[in-house]
Picture (cartoon, rainbow, N blue to C red):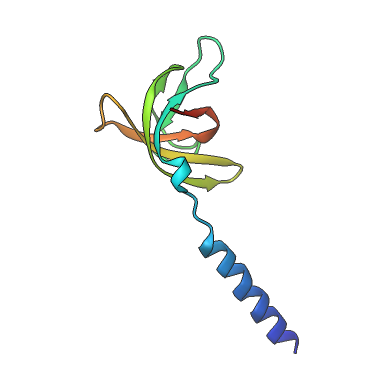
Length: 100
């Protein structure tokens, strides 16, 4: 009985994880960098986390294309490309993006 309960619980948990779509349709499209303080810049990184190397600093107002997003720890990271240079891609924190 106990084993059946844990198997059912695991199935529900896995189903919930698989049904969660980290990149919803509302999160895709054109966005701009917003909310970066003062003279600072949003760091575009090589991967989804602060442990990845910084590719580029992006000031407020920079227009990006958001391709996908994923949750890593407490931060939602989005794979983006620059609107004006689509070959330049990396990851930025979702917290600093505003939908256009």
